[in-house]
Amino acid sequence: MKVFISGIAGFLGSHLAEICIKKKYKVVGCDTLIGGTLDNLSDLDVEFHKVDCSDLDKMTEIMRGVDVLCHAAAFAHEGLSNVSPKLVSENNVVGSVSTFTAAIKNKVKRIVFCSSMARYGNAPTPYVEDTKPLPMDPYGISKVAAEDILKILSKTYGFEYNIAVPHNIIGPKQKYDDAFRNVASIMINLILQNRRPTIYGDGNQKRCFSDINDCIQCLEKLMFDPEVKSQIVNIGPDEEFISINDLYEMISNKLKFNKEPIYDKARPNEVYHAFCSSDKARKILSYETKVHLTESLDKMIDYIKLKGPKKFEYNYDIEVETDITPKTWTKKLF
Ligand SMILES: NC(=O)c1ccc[n+]([C@@H]2O[C@H](COP(=O)([O-])OP(=O)(O)OC[C@H]3O[C@@H](n4cnc5c(N)ncnc54)[C@H](O)[C@@H]3O)[C@@H](O)[C@H]2O)c1
Image (cartoon, rainbow, N blue to C red; front, side, top):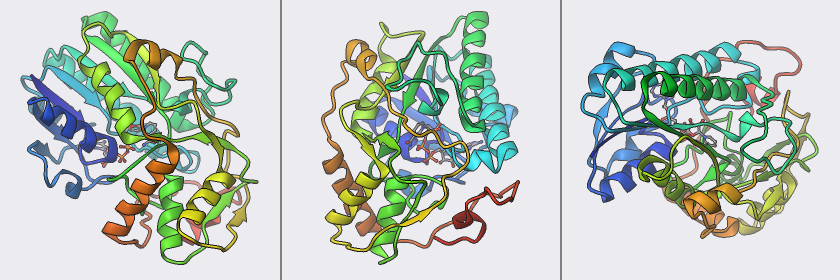
């Protein structure tokens, strides 16, 4: 079995590569390295190509002989997409369609697409899969657009597909120095530098965090289980909804940091409560939360301590700068 993972040097992609190698599959992947690092692949036997998913010719060439594709590459930047809509939409829509097209040209049998909980936007929580998507920002819309195109292409060309809907995954190998995303790891990175994290809005907005290992097991089934096809499935726990204030308290207690966070105005279009039901994953993927939030945060803290706290990167251009653009981004405050 030959597996292709786009975004393989990223957080999810590199963990997925590890699982596929354990299953003795041949693993090929691509990444531009804008959001990932080769360090994530250093101990893994993969065939790596520094190729942009939007490059159809190169993608077609490197996907030869592939049986299963997991498309994990994206600008996974929901907040940023409001101030850099062209950048995020172009990458996530064109990059996805190009990847799917290369797979079709190579007669790939199954495509798994990593969507996002952002697809649900302002729909009632907990989100269930058959809720009509109501994305509230260009990132969510780009994910729904890619899902819709994937479904149409599957109908046209007959390949199998599944759509994974992860939410706020945490764990080792996640980028923790990107100023635009990954709230838990930004908090940890700042506190380890004895700096006060910023909370946007009143901090009572609720999220649910998933451990990478629990998430990967679901993705594995979506990729390889012959019984699971044409499915869209939320992946992650639904037992521990938590406010950003409570997340801050958990992390600061673990790190024995006793300063208050800085409160800044809410970011544009940020959904207040965003968490999913995992009933479908429990039913069709035998999902079970094995790693709870406190343990998962401990793993993340250990990882960041091991690698060392880092200065934040601002790798993406801000296209529209107005008074609603967070000043943490325009003034590079992290
Ligand atoms: N981590 C989460 O909490 C989460 C939640 C929901 C959905 N997702 C989705 O899961 C997928 C993986 O997320 P992640 O957390 O691993 O993010 P990540 O940034 O760690 O990994 C994505 C990788 O894709 C690469 N990439 C981006 N655009 C590319 C392109 N055009 N061509 C080739 N490579 C490109 C980046 O360099 C990065 O290494 C993404 O599609 C994301 O939208 C993630």
